Image 1 (cartoon, rainbow over the protein chains, first blue to last red):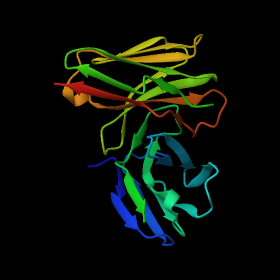
Image 2 (cartoon, one colour; image 1 turned 120 degrees about the vertical axis):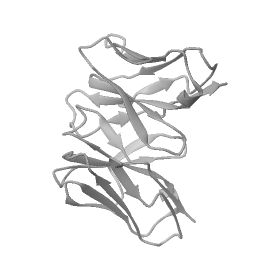
Image 3 (tube, helix red, strand yellow; image 1 turned 135 degrees about the vertical axis):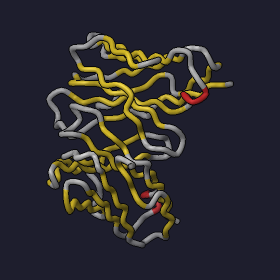
Image 4 (tube, rainbow over the protein chains, first blue to last red; image 1 turned 180 degrees about the horizontal axis):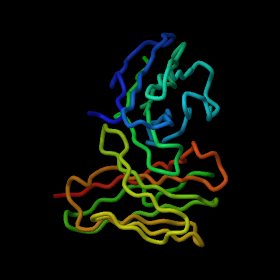
Length: 113
Length: 113
């Protein structure tokens, strides 16, 4: 069983479209995250959720809206996609913040054309 | 900046050789974590070292932390082709929100057969 799974793995879409990425973890963790990795491999945190509550929103455009229906799921919805949104998006989870290790999904490569 | 900076950016070694990469930072940390990312995959946690620890080992990996110099190193001994990956240091900053881990841009390691 995959610990943190994201779908889809690849997403190609046109500018202006709305898309969602789903994430599920089966580790029983309280905390989930979305990270964005740019073309230079730099990883930047976007959102952190703890027990379904938003803890960190790291100056992300409000076109990005995370939703956590329960502790095991954290989805990312993106409205009005722009070329600059092209990146790899990673979901991660941990047991109560980063005082312990984090587990990452395999990533979703989003390409906006 | 609040993220670690890895050095070198890229490293190419022969199978069987040791690989050393460094991470420097500018602020106080609670812990420092090293992750590996194989091409096209998610990040995998390698080692977490706390600010009151100086050295940790895990198999062929050895991590050191010098908080006075604000630096850490990751040593991979007897490298194998499977060690080809990008390696990231990540900082849990002291006094910061527990739900934020700051990543650098990584060191890309290529192990030649």
